[in-house]
Amino acid sequence: MCIKIVFQVHNAQEILKKNISKLAEHHKIEGVGQEIKKGMIQLFICGQEEQVDAFVDSLYLEKTSEVLHDIVIETCPADRSYRGVFRIVE
Image (tube, rainbow, N blue to C red; front, side, top):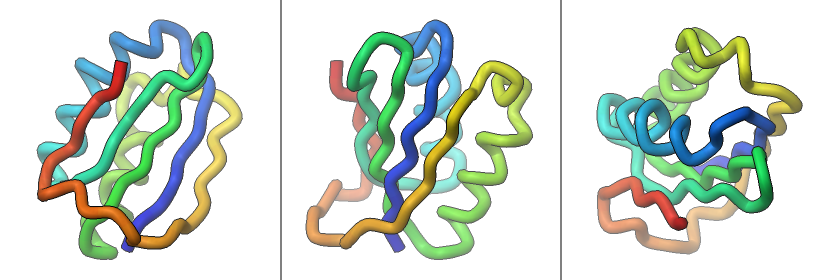
């Protein structure tokens, strides 16, 4: 299962490096995360349905959730291979 998540946040690079990458590792998520414009993060994540659900739940439950705004989640095709890792694109 693959999904695309887009949201607004302050300190996007810090959130990507400190929080998102750790959550992805913890939930065995593969994909890519990127700040697509100032304060806006886009994630493409793939994994087993339970892993993806747990990752999304963690986004809302993390103490950083109070700074996440305008979250949009949509399914996307699993047409790429992320080779089992989550990468941050700068």
